[in-house]
Amino acid sequence: MISCTGLRVERGTVAVLAGVDLRVDAGEWVAVVGPNGAGKTTLLHALAGLVPATGEVLVDGHAPGRASRRVMSRSVALMPQRPVVPDGVTVRDLITLGRTPHLPRFGSESSDDRAVVDDLVDRLGLRALVSRPATDLSGGELQRVVLARSLAQQPKVLLLDEPTSALDIGHQQQVLDLVQELRASEGLTVVAAMHDLTLAGQYGRRIVMLDGGAVVADGTPADVLTVERIAEVYGARVEVLARPGGPVVLPVAGGGAR
Image (cartoon, rainbow, N blue to C red):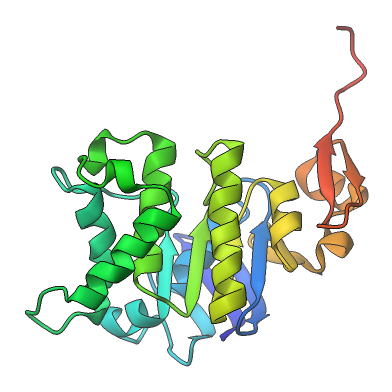
């Protein structure tokens, strides 16, 4: 579903991604982790065709830098970390924008389009918000609305950039469980940049760790999320607990005076 060979993105003279090789099969959930500035968001933007890149990249058979936005939007949806919300747009209208790639040119939404939106409104607990201006929402509420907009595209590939950063623990589980359900039932391919290593290990079937724009580890959560590697890449003291659902990463406080 996704294939990258020698993917490179530069900003000025700085290589933000420095020759990334990556393959993601249909129906996989790959969690992309790494410290701030490692290149996680840039990788997602390159897969969506939003930044100039060199190397060979194919997503659902399309080259993101050459395919039209309409073609890419039918295959790939990106949930950004910092969404841009137009003034005055309601929650329902914002979610409905996700149906745009499927509408006929100069056409309007059909009953099927409205049914897709209604289903997502209910599944993400947004019914009480549908008439409110999206600009009036809290960060967590807006995050769920933007996910609903992305899912309304009915993509084959879902790119998530820190999808739970503003959510409480209950809504984190609700959002990630829904994505997991769609992955299992509809073969959705998920690539998610995640700061929370425990959530990455619980939901990602595979973890790709970036550092300095390069892949430094790629494997199962248990293989990648080790005490030694996290110390080396993040400079962090942690304890890693093996659990049936995946590793749990706990920070360990320093030994200084309290």
